[in-house]
Image 1 (cartoon, rainbow, N blue to C red):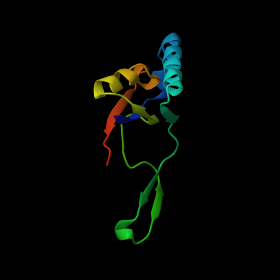
Image 2 (cartoon, helix red, strand yellow):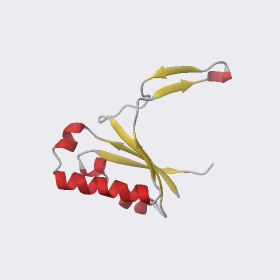
Image 3 (cartoon, rainbow, N blue to C red):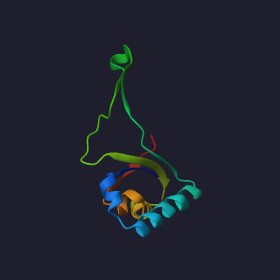
Length: 108
């Protein structure tokens, strides 16, 4: 199964997390990358609309809103939701006072 993960976090939470915990979280991310996980830091989003296929409009900014800023994304493969949760539980956003959402990606 594939999962989309979205990490949220603020610099303040990251900075107040012990350096050793942060270092291990970044090492964990590197191990995930080496295992083939696609991940990256979130850039500035745009919203794309094309109602009734009558013309595309693009607007800067996020459509979704959250209490914490989006920090990054990953596409992971895991046998189950439980395994996916275990894979992301030690990432920087999860350990540095942020949150990671795990979305099952249905094959359409």
